[in-house]
Length: 373
Image 1: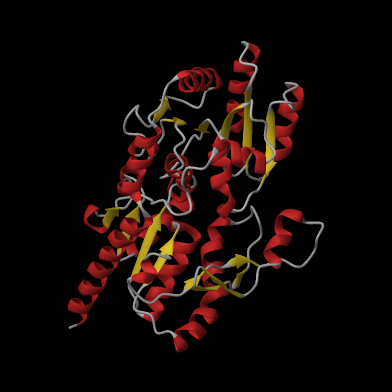
Image 2 (image 1 turned 180 degrees about the vertical axis):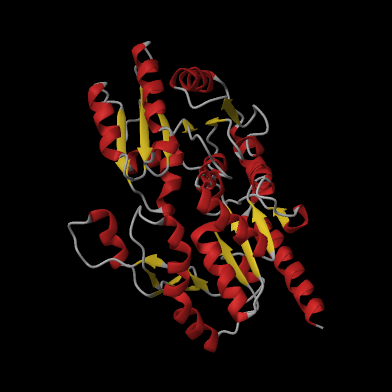
């Protein structure tokens, strides 16, 4: 949106769940500390609160989301009479956005990003709500062709769907001096580092990745180390697995790191690995390539649309520790043309992505104007 803001005036509304300031609920307490307004990269960002009961009554999240933020949007419109609502994630955000569009008589564009389409449609009511959202939206943007196919299964007209792959910030993610960043991060210069980044959830396949690296270590690759950057509900389970495998010396859960610091972790790595069971268009793969780091990843959904050649990475057919181990070993023994990795990913800048998104906005607005004449 930082790049889109160069093409039009925009305000960002990023609602967060309401939660009381109770520190002993560590996972949810952080939401209470988010300001109601902040400026990020020169953009005005508003954080109205919405009410929900975690993991309960998901079919009501959309209407609760809408009711919670409606007054904030009305207040914003008095100062900023926007022409279009651009919503990311089909549910609950997209559902609330479509209701806002109907009441305020504004066109709505919904971007689907992966989990919102891959996870929720397994629930009958949520599938109906998501299908309603995408049918009522004026346009749908999918971040991969594979995701577009999933949207078509919801009987959304193809003419409404555009595919715009994610971009990468090539100013933020760039090659770094490996020795220098390892020293800054207090990492050994002798280790062979496999890096993975993501929320610590089952879908990301960190358990299979830990198995893979443990097996490689057992076979005599003594210098290998796996660093996992991220936080999430699966951390205790993953730490138990590491303890059980006696892998604490070479598998590290390094926790959450700020986005602006991630280039150092990519720069310190010899290989990036993503073992997800589902992905739309994963930013982490683009970021790794922009830093000149080759990739091993599961061949799911939008991933093959990024790793289109073995010059950029190795794809694994399934989320399986043995297959991952074989691919990681192959990748670590392969001589990569890192310059080619960087040149390839520069074709997918956020600037180019923003231009494509803005073209979709213009199509929607031009149709709306002609329809209202």
